[in-house]
Length: 353
Image (cartoon, rainbow, N blue to C red):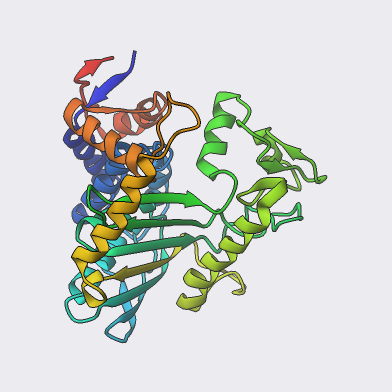
């Protein structure tokens, strides 16, 4: 039986919990909204799954609880922000809002953000930008985190370095959010808690053997995650990972070369207004035609029609907006001790599927 919950109830619950833990009310709302939206889109490892870790960061002072990001450099069409340890979600929403506003003057706007806490699901920001009419690219790295080996290596060097895009198109945006690693950290953590193997040999142990055992990255010395593409084509994933490092830490001017790298995320946000080129209608027509043609392609298996990136997420969002969010079964049990500690009522389910 899967319980379903109203998005508004989950957001209000998470917001109250963050606020009682000490986070500024506006920041608490931003964090809660982004996490719930991630669950609505089907990114169950990057939504409310983060609540216990976020509360711990607030309680221990690792997350700055109020304030605004500092503007380090403003070139009009380019902007460098320092998050200063603030929650990643309000910083990113401010960066997105600022970037979209500047598209009225500049057809291309780039925001680099450094030193913000975890921003969670990149697809949320990419989708919001696309729905506002902008071709939106988002990438993130974590300079203090080494989890992924370079292609051919067995020692962790870089973070999982996700990259996302929201592409306006007739019929709805094309949307993707993917790690440049073979698997995300949160999925490894969940498999370990469940005592399960990963679906593929996506890790390398500290002796250089590919494995599906989550414990491989918790040994001393640790193993590592393989780049996207794994043993055969991981050079492609590692190349993309290096691009993400350049776009994030490189443009932000701080990263892994620092003796004491900043905790949290470095972020690249790039917005393009199709109206500054051949026009928004022409852009949406072209991208929409290609998406529709892909969906109409003859499938390898008639039972599984061809999908375009974002189709599943958009369908899940609409279905869960109508019927309630079907949370992963471990999420509320992991939140429950915190809800009890801070006296926040647990949201009541709508239905049981």
